[in-house]
Image (cartoon, rainbow, N blue to C red; front, side, top):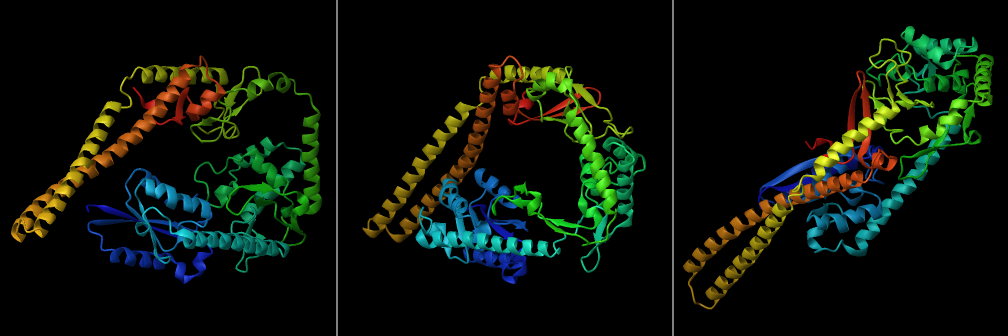
Length: 515
């Protein structure tokens, strides 16, 4: 067997890190030792590690790379320490082991569970394995509930504070919130400016002019333009009661243990502890600023905005809404609510020296430009007769079937040769000569078959991609303008640059690359 690929998968969650038996090194040792004991010739070992990821879902980078290689036919075997390392969700894990891996002829080994799919001939191990899956899932959910309960108890005591705490504060060596003067000075300036009647945009402009670091830049999480404040960030700081010294936690909660989605909690469910940490602004100042912002918002809601009423339907019906981004700063370009609507980069509107300052593009012109590109690509794709290389794939599949027949004949010849030896029709010397010749031919056929299988898998994948490409082109050919349905089918993002330059990120592979 040549180039037998074994994928060694290792997963360590944050809770597993507390146990030496679950360490990455220990998992690597256990799995590696078992692979060595299998005595596989010409084996190639690949390692995939997800460090700090939960096992209740498959939203993990390393396991996604592994599954992609499985789909491409580049993995022969997957080995893990135990079932829970691969996944704790019974349904999803069982689906891969029972359905996906057998389809791609991938062997699955769980060392500590004594499970090897090669021993079950298509079965997955029966009730014992199913019970282990269920126990892993139950353990994960039960552990999650206990962790969540402990977290809420820490919130009640005001002890749940993250390392990257509220902008304007930092943690001391006792994990207590203390004032970070460099950032706190910016917060005080913002409150004073707001109290003087400055708008959010005016405050953001002042902060930019004074080169005041944004929260992300201050914490080292942003590399470029760390002085460009978003209005939503300014507003969030001005409305955060924690700057008065009140601890607040529990504003959001996870929908489910297996989900990363969070939802907002009503204020009645929050945990609040006054006097928890030193205030940056006094309560009277905070209340006064909140009242100023409330009055401005209230006044705005009371005004009759004629353009919104007259042209709001045009904005909502725009096929590119939510798909246009600035090519310079990568922020979403917002669509104006006017008759001659434009997509505008408002992130850099306060940064006069930014490359994309006041960058805008006519919405109608952008729609027409994008549709023109789509129409040209559709014409090219539909005029390519052999886009799918169907004849080539069919020919190779026929060759694979023929080689399969030759392999069966070769095995039959070896069987007959052995029968002749047993019946005394040939001696041992003649048997060895005949067997050596048959083995050499069988090895040649097996290697040729392996090459064909690999090439056919790639061709099949290419055919599927090209089928999708042609199907998308046929769908687009039925439209005489850019519709929302067509945009959702083909376009991931439209990037706009200064100088009327536009780049399109396509959803369908190859759509923009046919020339």
